[in-house]
Amino acid sequence: MNFLAHIYLSGDDPQIKIGNFIADGIRGKKYLDYPEKIRTGILLHREIDTFTDAHQTVKKSTKRLHENYGHYSGVIVDIFYDHFLARNWSSYSNIPLDEYVKDFYEILNDHYEILPDRYKKMRPYLIRENWLYSYRTLDGISKVLDGMNRRTQNRSKMNFAILELEKYNSEFEKEFSSFFDELITFSKHKLKSLLHE
Image 1 (cartoon, rainbow, N blue to C red):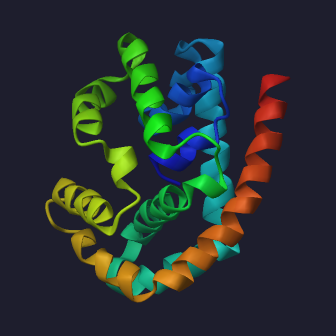
Image 2: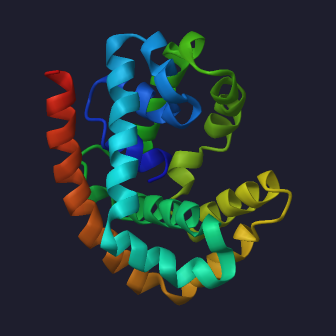
Image 3: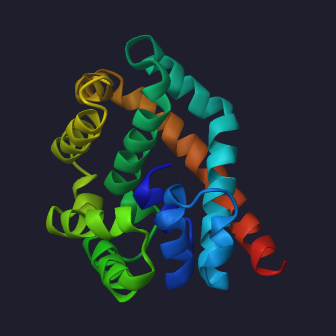
């Protein structure tokens, strides 16, 4: 899953949200350098990724992209799924999306000192461009894919994946809806067990 889903699946604790948000930048046992709740967020993120990568519905989404995007397909599906979460946000949260992401940006600012360098550098762009809120539109997702493609020196061709999102929109959305309900249940149970370890 991508940023929005990981933050959402963290529950209400700001430090768990931060841990989940920065987890891709924390390798191996480096998570032990962080406060307890942030460690919990990092471990939750890893569990979510393992569950997601092994899930048959996600594999179905990924397979649809594999011919054109190879090993980047999984990253693209993560971004697509964030789009469907943002677009259907009111089905998952009583807090409006714009308010939710604004609150998260404040959490990010409050925890600036603890962010890994890569996330410190990303933070101003994330907030200024309002990435998390922009996920709800095809234009927003197109910009994200363009940015990801530039980061791969244009090797991934991810900027073209918006065409598949438009063409197979209903298929991807059905797969997201089916999978995300299971992921919510999994994440709640996993978070509960991590908090009691």
